[in-house]
Amino acid sequence: MEKISISQFDDVYRLFQQSFVLEELRPYEQMKKLFQQNLFSIYAKYEHNELQGAMIVWELENCVYLENFAIETKMRGQGLGTYFLQQFCYLYKDKFLFLEVEVPHDEISRKRIQFYERMGFVLNPYQYIQPTFRENDHSVQLTFMTYPKVMDDQQYQMIKKEIFKVVYQQKGEL
Image 1 (cartoon, one colour):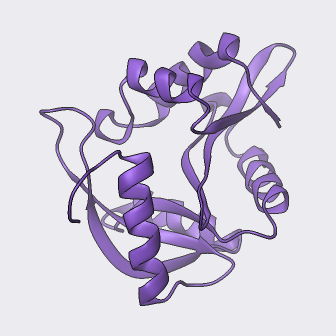
Image 2 (cartoon, helix red, strand yellow; image 1 turned 30 degrees about the vertical axis):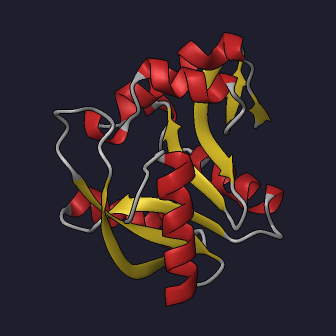
């Protein structure tokens, strides 16, 4: 797993398009611009010049945020997701780590949460509506998963404020 360059961006975005519903993925131009501004890093794994998986990582002031994480469809179930998360947790072992998941509402969302729990992430009790990326997007209700422990109310407010300002680029009161 290594940081990618701009020349690999299109490969990664295609993988994310295949892996996420439209409402959960930034528009191409917006994501590319933020990447070019070095606001986040993209880590990926290639084998024989074929993309196997990728993740977007924001190194924020108070924590490290895993925004998007996807494994190529044909590579799923082979331990690659586990490898990525182990590398992520090791790389940022001295930081407070978090990611967002949909509030559990179906089998897929529950299995996703169970996977992260097996990796040591903890489901938090806080829920919120994700700001939309496009004007006509449907809103998505999310919750945080954190590593290595659950966050308290003060951490939640601080982290939510930071991601809404930096990651979602929202202004004003949350």
